[in-house]
Length: 250
Image (cartoon, rainbow, N blue to C red; front, side, top):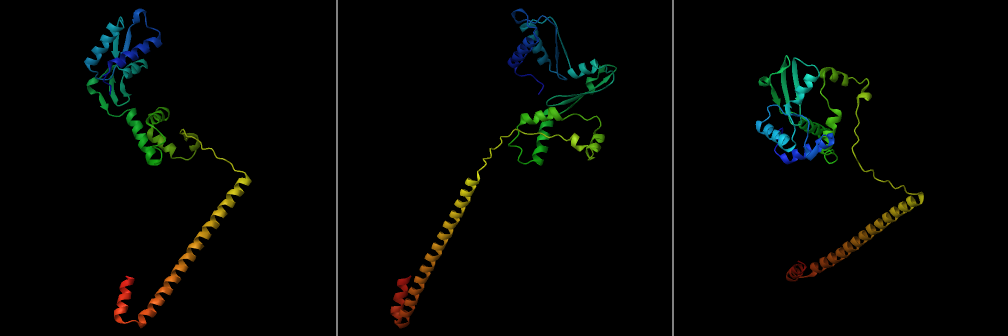
């Protein structure tokens, strides 16, 4: 969200920023006025705490706050229009009339780069089911930053994309990181040995199958001879002896 809740991290970020800009004076103080951008409808608590850090910790002589999108609109000479400011988690629409922003009519949309990345991820997963294991959230956000934009003429661009003419120039190919498997090329001698090994394995399987069929045939013949002998004995035996022989078989 746009609400600061970890002030230690903010101090570390400001330390790094002032050092990189080369404006850290003696004893870590900043001897220049500072302009800080803030989100729309920023909390007074957040602004007050940031002011305490700037004045008490860094000793800045003056500080001003403003909305970055309105700064940009004024810098580019805008006077009357609708300012659309998209951030990571939200988008704000601020009407401006005669260089004066109408904050009471401003609107917030819960759509930002985070939702764009999530939507792009869903589209890619729907088209490429095997993709989730090959691409992470950071790479998805990189795709959004590098290849996504707000169209000035959506219907016109869609009509041009549906036209096959010049499609190759508009097509974008993204190569994901991958590890190429090393293919070992075998010599003719190795291929011949492998083929002979497969033939030998096939012959052994055929011999084992023939041996099993022969053993099964011998077992069936032995069972047939046994039951023939039993049939002859039952034919000449009394009922009592026949019952005894059958019970013994069970």
